[in-house]
Image (cartoon, rainbow, N blue to C red; front, top):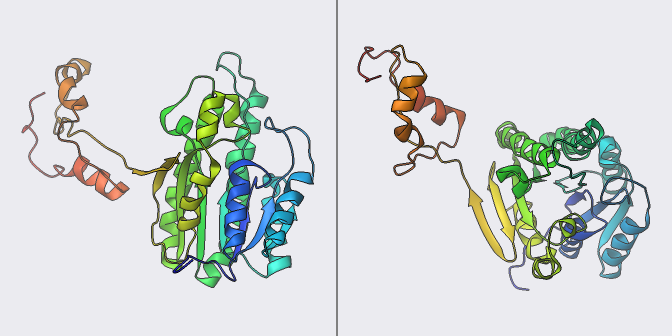
Amino acid sequence: MQNALRYDGRVAIVTGAGNGLGRVHALLLGARGAHVVVNDLGGDVHGGGKSSAAADQVVAEIKAAGGSAVANYDSVEDGSQIVQAALDHFGGVDIVINNAGILRDSSFAKMTEDDWDLIYRVHVLGAFRVTHAAWPHMRNKGYGRIVMTTSAAGIYGNFGQANYSMAKMGLVGMANTLAIEGAAKNVLVNTIAPLAGSRISETVMPPQMMAALKPEFVAPLAAYLCHESCRENGSLFEVGAGFHAKLRWQRTQGHHFHGQAFGPEQVARHWQEIVDFDDATYPASIGESLTSIVQDVGSPFGQGKP
C-alpha cells in the first residue's frame, strides 16, 4: 500500500485486546509493524473469571501474519505490570490504547456499591494505572500517543448505566488534562467514543445493529491518533459504522447580572437568555471559559438589568 501509515519499531499496549474492539486495534497495529502487548485478563463481560486463551489467540494471529506481539494477562488494576511487560519484551512503550472494560448494568435504585466500585476500578483506576506507569517513559523519550475509550453513555447518559457513565466521562476529563500536561513532551492524548459490536455492546443492542457495527470500522481512527504524523491532542471523537466526528463543548451567550444582587426570580426572568443556543460559543479551554465569564470584572456595576 503506497504511503501506508506504519508503526515500525513502535511499542503499543492495547488493554482488553482479547476480543472485540481491542482485538482489532491490536491486529491492525501489529499488521502495520508495531510490537504489540496484547493485554487481556480473560474474564467475562461482568468482570468475573480469568483465562489466557483470548490474549494468546490474538498474539498467534499477529505472529502468523508476520508481526510481533506478546500476551499479558494482568488486570488493568495492575497497570505497572502491563507496562513492565512492554519494557521487558520490547524495551519501551510508545502507544497506549486504554480499551479494557466491563459492564455491571442496573437501575440506580438497585445498584450496589460493588457494582459501582468494580466499574470504577476497571475503567478509571485501570486506565490511570496503565497510563501512569507508561507516562514517565513517554516523557523521557519525548514521544507518546495515548487513546482513552469513552462511550455515548458517558457523554449523554443512559438508563441503567450510572456507574458506567460516571467512569466513561471520568476518562474524558483525565484525557483532557493529560493532553495539556503531555503536549510539551510530545505525548498526545485523545479520546474515542466507539460504537462497535463487542461482548459489552451485544448486551444492549439488537443483533441486526450488532452486524452493522464492525470493530474494523473503529480501529483505523484509533490507529491514526496513535501515529507519529497525527498532531491531534485533547480531542473527543464519536466513531462507528464508518462515521467519524469530533465533538466540542457548546455554550449559550447566557445572561450576566454584572455583580448586582439577584435571586431565583431574576434567574427565572432571564431564563430564555440563559438557555438560548441560537448564538452559541465554543469554549475550548478553562481560559476561554473564564474570559467570557469574568470579562466585565472591573467594569462599573449596574450595567445589567436584574
